[in-house]
Length: 491
Ligand code: GLN
Image 1 (tube, helix red, strand yellow):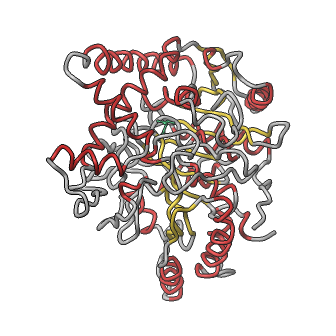
Image 2 (cartoon, rainbow, N blue to C red; image 1 turned 90 degrees about the vertical axis):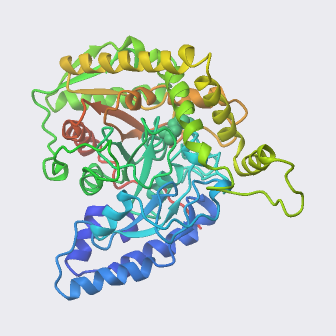
């Protein structure tokens, strides 16, 4: 078996034992990623210093230094996270040439742990989307079928792992953007509890919802990566001071005594036959591992999409105000046609810099926050959000983990939903509530559709109880044994 299909853990063992150098591993992935990228478009850019970074890891090993837990492993980083000296675009024309002077805390922690940045992964512009079709750099494709979307917004991060262009990656999840592409691409994707992971240096979309997390081939890989990136950060006051457990060392597939809740609102008749079968199979697996399965009810999740799209767009309109062509972002060419006033200066720069989905959201969010409408939209949405969070807390008194589909269907075709934004938003029907409530959530591979497209299952747990969620995911992963099945993407 070629090393490209190996898990992060397996690769790190190879490097640790000296069977392969970090340079060899990085070179292998870099070559493969560069060869496949014209087809998959998972990367916006590659790190020209990747081999140098790998070399440094090898030198440290030769000198007998204590290497970090990710020593020599190359990673794809969603191009929403700042990387010092390396272009960070948010997949927008607005930032197409932005070179950050510092790295996001997540990136810094990965590098301190010995990881090598391979390149920057494609995404929907400013992480707004569910298909990766909103990228200024063109859509990313699903490695299992190049006519299908990889999901979004962290589509590039998911596709890079599924196509074995990188052993693991980092995505961000504001309303489902890690779980949904992980689900469409047949990999593991974890959105941590809000406050686990620092948002410092991550281009902000909706600050009360955004969290970065790992996207990997196995549950154990995700658990390890999350250990590395979690923890309090003085640069982000919303990070929690809680101790970060060693989830990867405590994984257990024995689910005796555990209660798994099935939120009945998430099992609608909208779900495709294939998805239903795969999820039902997971229910059987957790039962076989000793868990008790009960039905729970979360009546307010039916408002998940409207609340999310009011809150996320409101926060986005505020966060994106900084891209005015003066302080940040693309500036129109005023030499040729001068602006007649400041308003035109802004509107031309922003009009050229942002794509249509981003504009739609800024307009919607500005409206929600405007005086006269604030109470009816933003305030009301925040109140219902609070009630929804309470409902989840109640549910977690009755069970330990919630299990549901991630989406109603497997990946859809490129172009199928672009014309209708509402249709696109409905993709997030089962994922947004997790972010609104700040809970940890993940997608773990559950099987394949009849057409050979991956299907995942969504798990979520009480605040800061990632371990229980990981254990259920691990039990499903061990029983299904899908971690050695990868698409055959040809150059
Ligand atoms: N699809 C959702 C949206 O478009 C979620 C995006 C995300 O999680 N970044 O807003």
